[in-house]
Length: 480
Image (cartoon, rainbow, N blue to C red; front, side, top):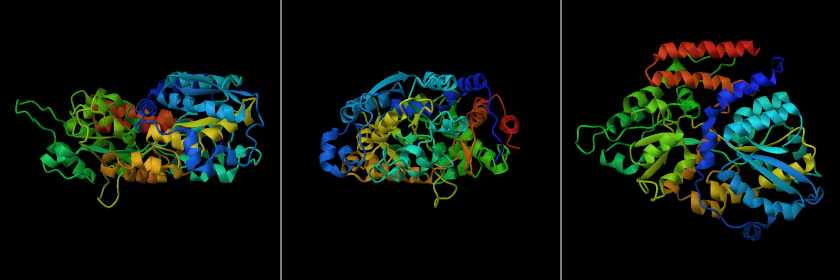
């Protein structure tokens, strides 16, 4: 492994301000909570007494009188977490003060807090693309120390291993546990059941079938000579959340095992080429400028027949006051190269990290442990739709809601996706080696792909530029 060099904090902050908007998927999840609120904690404790906090073999009152400060994304995710906090405060005697920020402001606040060493925030929401950087700089505490401390954690009660493996491992750098996931999101193919049936189009299971379906479903449905239904919607800008699904499905990626760029490899080129072709030929007008809210709204208003994006949108399509396609939406795995193996689903997750400069680490860990425990995860998941825990997915409460979405197909697609997602989907690691430069790498590729979609550059020109820039990033960072 290379020797890591500590870059100037100012350079990192400037780079991060440039790159963070890439990950609008994080905010998308925050603003599109899927499933209605569940029941209150006391009722869950009656149903699942073994997971009640009182059955954990630790002293929840050992830090009574402490105050912890938590930075969260200003969103419904924060609202749902804040709703639960009074229960924790009564349990522990620990006061939790929360500050909410818009996504870019949140990242900047955290980084400035880390760099100053003041420990303004004890815990904070983080996204997966930060795990390598935070571990490298040792800005966040290694949570394995708290998980393995019997005075702070009842390991059997907490059951860290129950957290979905794909996201649990994404927040680890070796044995260094950077964060604990609050949720996990994968991607899928949403399609209009009525449209596919009307035009005798089977649900695509391969990339070739996806292109064929998109072509057939780009239609003038009212006979006025103008296209009014487009075959597919995908992100044109800030596409780094959905684009890798095509790159990896075609056998490509960002970096190979020798830490060299593979952006111009035949496989990566084919995947990016398929993404671009779908949008240029069968996407709605202005696709090069469309971000996730546009993709969601186009589909919800009946303008597109299919989309590939986050599975957390399921209920957004079922609200008849906002959606013209309620009751008409199906869900499937992202198509693969063959019908036997689905395509790359990718992933996203919001999580909690602990500031290494916190002066109340024990109290902070009790909050993090409680907030991500099984019963709290169940409460959160009934509002959120997606979850971070295997146990939640088998409960009657969760199944009664999630198990019915999209004719009962949603949960299978979601769990398959979370089980098979590529750990390096966001270029955060290669075979376990953390890549702190991941945001710069994915931003570079995504920007060049947008230039192809808009017609400013050819596929070969843009990929050559992206390839060379990514290689320079890797060389400058000292990987080879």
